[in-house]
Length: 185
Image 1: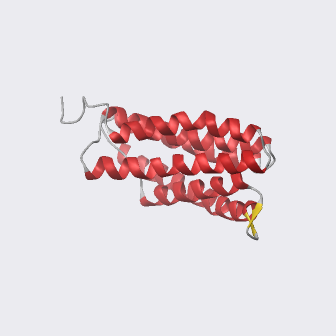
Image 2: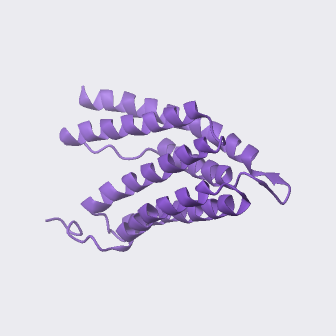
């Protein structure tokens, strides 16, 4: 067994589990779409986003990368983003077709990574994919807030970030397919 492979109770894995636990909390908050529910959803989503940034940073810096973490981290990320986007569809805060494209891309890239792993190849997240995630997270915080605060219309800000996130999502997805084709050929 490799170093840290058997260690499942570490900080990065705990942060991923916290992110998973926050998903139903965010969904419940968005079920009550007024200002308070929206604010709380954005707050909890923001906390979950911070755990995403911290777990990877801590795992790499302190060499706490585990097989469980390699599974939990992307799972928590995809579930967090997908569940929040789906709830925002029900509130008419985000177009359905955008959510379909983003979730389809995530599933396709996950499938590609799975095929690559079977072939003994690990496809790491690209910097483009990391920027995509940052824009998605910021857009969903703003779209969850939705209302105007301190003269800032968070829905407009969120949609602006979402359009950039969509472009980065499609671009990075295309890059993964192109890279995987070269690797597996």
